[in-house]
Length: 348
Image (cartoon, rainbow, N blue to C red; front, side):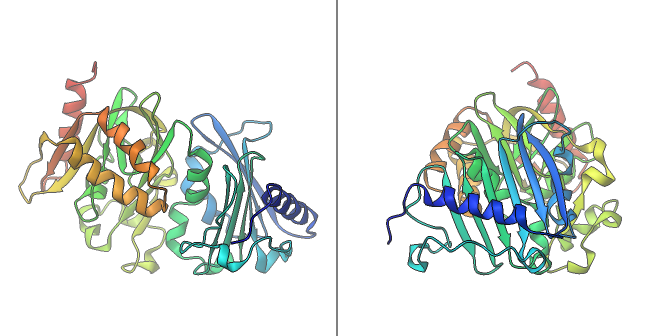
């Protein structure tokens, strides 16, 4: 493995940024987003389908002025044709995930050969470049979680923790819903739409571990084709019907049901959904170990994260009561059960 000079990532990013700025006659769209009072700027260069990167985070748009903490440039090479600077690494420097080894703390670089997407981040400079060979060739499911890797890398080593979970609640508090695939996490989360509880996400959310608050990352509700019959009221709003059943249906709640969303709330508990086939829903205590097994492996696997993330998740689980929520066929009993528990513990 080559030894990378401390200045190489910063120099590469600055040279890339300058080439992007110098590109002529290229469509540009600029946005500003806010997560937990941390502002992120996004500039899409040579991209016509800007919704691909913005619909899922439209509820986090902000009109705040001034310099963002992190500036993300997304460049469609097929349109912008702003050639990357000479690479500063060799192919053998990439790990099995396509991530560049030997970088300094706060630096990150990854190449996805599957999507032909190259991502470079320098946290000290507050700069990120995402170089896409052709945005039109990206898989539809990536529309549902834009910048997930970038945001995780940006916020890691801070008090903010990304977890693979749904989250529902209100201003007084709410719960995380997490578990292995097929256990009913999404069903339980989506059943709360239209209830007294509001939606912060059904896939990934961000946790402020200092204040024990959940922050919504994405406004996308995801529906398995086999689950559409349970949520017929959402079917007209599925944006990617042509992708069913190979992919999950995507409903961008910010546009069709903005009142159902909540940006953040205090976390009161972790609930582990498990479908029972009974009519009604019931709660029973879960152990910390059961909650950790439900939350940590999928989070670490999907983020391709370092094992140190396990300890952070363990600390979160240790601070919260944990329950199995044994869900029934009467979906309305799921939010009713959660709401009743929250009311009983609103002063906890």
